[in-house]
Image (cartoon, rainbow, N blue to C red; front, side, top):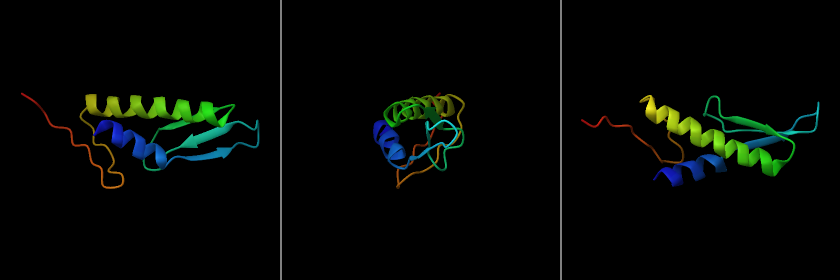
Length: 80
């Protein structure tokens, strides 16, 4: 489920070329703070994937909700 969530989230990523330095900027709408900037599109995608993974793990650790995406919802349950 987690892998599917990450892959689906990355499919919603938007990339653009920044005029100032011609680097690539990527973000995932609805995932506040998940963004990357790199000299190539490939590196930007790789960094965005790493940021997304860390962001999801952090939110799970802190018991924070994760956004639903394409019908995929990850609920955090407390275990005794």
